[in-house]
Length: 170
Image (cartoon, rainbow, N blue to C red; front, side, top):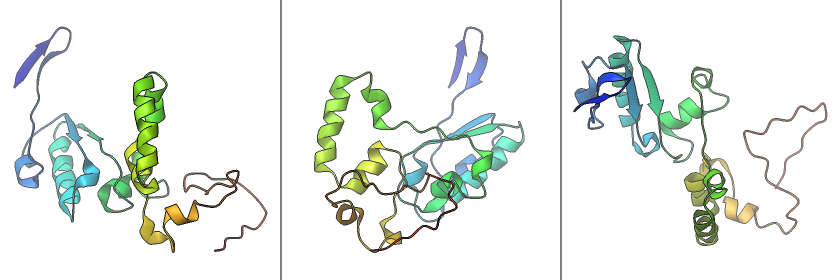
C-alpha cells in the first residue's frame, strides 16, 4: 500500500510472489529479492532477470538477501569473490558474532547450536559461508577433526601473497 513518512514523501511497497511473470512490466526504483539462496533450478535467474528489466525504467537499485545454500545458483554466482559479477555488488556479511557482542543470550544460544549442528550447517546459517562439500573428497567434519587446533583450514576468501610453492595433500 501507499505510505507517507515525514521528509520522504509518497512511496509504495509491493510484495510480489517470486515469479518472473508477476514482476515483468513494473517500473520500480528499488527492488529486494529475499532468500535468494532458497531458489531452485533456474527460478533465481528468472526472477533476477525480470527484476533487472523492471529496474531499468527508473535506474533503480537491487538488494539481495539470504543465507548461502552451497556454491550453486545465482546467489553464489553473484557473490563468488573470483567471479565476473562481484565487482558490480557491495557485499555485507552479518555473521552471528556481530550480534553476539551486544546480546549475551543470543551468543549463548548460538554456541549451544554449534555443538548440535554439523559444521556445514553452522557455517551457512551463522557464518555467512558458501560451503559446498561436493568439491572435497572428505566431508568437512572429518577433515576438521585433526587434533592440532593451531592448524586451520584455509578458507577460500583468504589470499596470501607468497613466492614459495604451496603443497596440498590428503
